[in-house]
Amino acid sequence: MGKMIKKIKNCGILFILILHFAFLIVNCCYSQNISGLYQDAMNAFYNKDYKKAISLWEEILKYDPSQKNPPKLIEMARSKMKNKVNPLLNEFHSQLGKGNYTIATEKIRELLDIDPLNQNFKKIATKLETVVSSLTGSLTEGGKINNILRKSIIGYVVGLNDERLPVLASRYAFQVESGNKLAEKIFLFMDREFPSIARLEVSEKGKNVIEQKLAVILDDIYDGKYEHALIECELVLQIEPDNVMGWKRLGSIYYALGKRSEAKVAWEKALKYDPNDKEIAKFYKKIK
Image 1: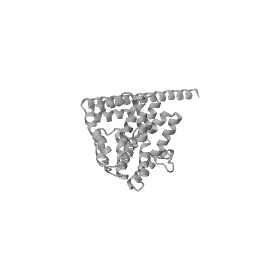
Image 2: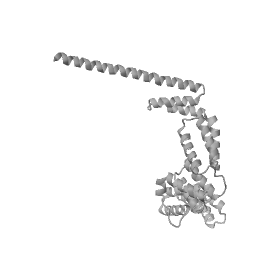
Image 3: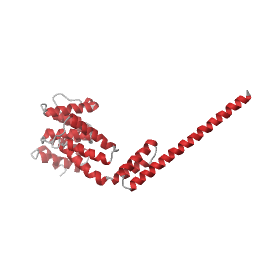
Image 4: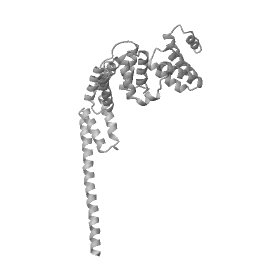
């Protein structure tokens, strides 16, 4: 019986030694793989093959997400690609702003050819392809409503300061022109894409988006909630940059916050759009 126990113990020790040895082999192979990938990546970088270098550093992160150097090296490689990327990126934003969505899609694909692992480019490409397939390939016509719809689509594709913009801009466009089929299509699409925003931003009967927000801003000013009023005012002016009341209230918010120079600029904007507004002129005299 004693011999059997001893034999079992010996087997257990042998098994542990085998496991330890196997771990050392795996660890050694792992280290060699990581080292090899680093070496290949640096060679690619020095040969100005930044696309390959990025892909190898991404491969290292798949092996070991805790590696600290690859993200920094990837950013360094991307900075070296700026001469190729920036002109295309500028052209992409230009075409997106003009409503040339098919051409903008071509530009983002060219950017992905240069930097195929860029997650931001991938997201933009996916959203832009959705716009072209589900909404329209082009929205280049002039006019207030088309300008607002383009802002809604820009907010959806690349994102803007206020994530509510795609929903509220398209909703406002449809409220102003309820017979506009494209406005309706974009409005319904944005409501589906951003259900939580659509649910939280409840429409008030008898008021469009801008009227509703201006009323909220006024209440906020009276209640001293200037920071919230500022956010809502900036949203109004993103949707409708020539809204005189929006500029007037923005000036009042800044004045209440003690930001006299910003208040002056806002009231000057209001006067630009409505030079005959006596109330603005009265406000303006306070700080002139």
